[in-house]
Image 1: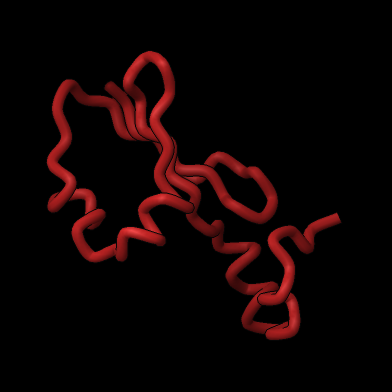
Image 2: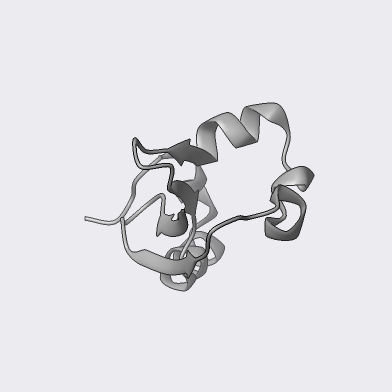
Length: 76
């Protein structure tokens, strides 16, 4: 089982953790609300975890342009 992190805005691969067993507490998932978990964490048929996060470039763009928060994707 692997964990893949992908930017929710531009689709850039942010990171990948390989392992057999993961603890949700160590990954920080326990800090998310149920709604956040449902929107951010997905499991594929092989049991891998896919997490939607934000990359540094998109974070910087959001900081410079706060109005971008209203859109799911803003990178053209």
